[in-house]
Length: 136
Image (spheres, helix red, strand yellow):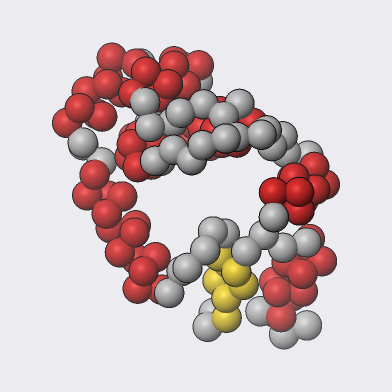
């Protein structure tokens, strides 16, 4: 499975390291909501992705998350307060509840109308999926 995942990542120009452990991403998700609210969501998500999947860093550790926040120009002191107070806990809970209600069982899952496409897919499959939503 990892060999196939590395192949797909390589085809898409993504770095995928040899991560030995899986770390809980809950705090990263909550901090991601804060970063989005501060106009840095894309940068934060890219930074967390690279830290986790390429570098194998523990994104469950507050110190790691604060380092990533600092790297994208957001204030680590404020980020620490957000994490300690769990400011975005309910927002992430709502996202999870919505995903469950929609029947999401894997990431990524793509939706178009009443159709869904589950899992990482080749570009042509995504193109056909999007095209089918426009009556092509």
